[in-house]
Length: 396
Image 1 (cartoon, rainbow, N blue to C red):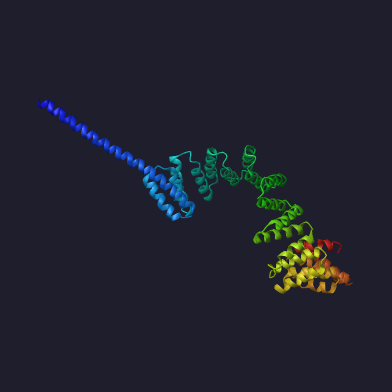
Image 2 (image 1 turned 45 degrees about the horizontal axis):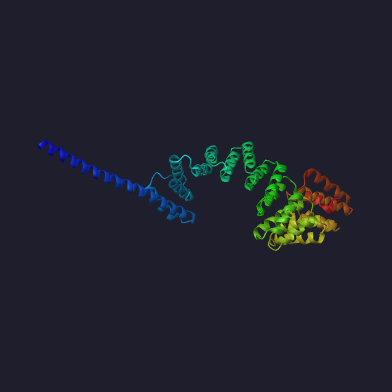
């Protein structure tokens, strides 16, 4: 009887303990479920705070999120981004690494590891990380372009071009890929292919001013000045941004000068003259354009304006002397060039022009001596070369 009683009591105790243990387990499971749910809610809140620029709030929220569920890869990824924004790159990298360890298929984690490696000038490592991201999301343009840039950083343009061509074939309507390929072609001085790609991209979007601008610079870098001038003049007409308009006008003026479209260059400089009125170098450039266009009085005015702003400015003296020479005032021109015969930049040119002035004035001995000096000094200045080759003074 005693034995039976003992067995019954033992069974009762076991049942009670089992019930307690089961209840405790249920409570732990419920808490774990709540922690995960809470962590997910906090992650969403932290993401919103991050996107709204409330980085301090986002950091506090994401810390609570990780405390609730340390195994959440997206939480470590977001904390890494927040640390990266604060320039705390080492800690950010640790969080990115934790994120991809928890989820090897977290493409954004690999991408951010690539970004951090790129900042630290680790081109090969950046390429590996970016390539992992692209492998996971093969059609994400940001990843493709990151891999292309990583190839370029390693001086592997052929691989970059091959990747872009492959992706363009797979995604023919993706404008940014064509633009990236065109940019790369331009850097490699394959301007014909670059121009073709830029033009294709321009046709694929109405918001194409940035692409048109890139096309203009591509023409510039390849020395196709006339086409470049046309592009920048068109951009001047279309742009409503004053700062960009100024840059486009400067580019259009430069390209017009180099393509001997001097009237057009004068027009561009004229539109810039109010803002640049106190810039002596600007007035010299405008005067050069005017001289090339045969606007002698305007060239003289520009030269004098530059000298008023910067007395003794050798380029302005040279411009004034050339304008005087073309106007037939050889004595005044000779005096101008005599003022800059000690200027290193214009030395040879000044002696050459003195020789021509003396020749026109009938001073043959002085002309012969000046020609000899010019020959000894060798190449002329860039400014002098332009003035000698100017449209209205080629037969000097």
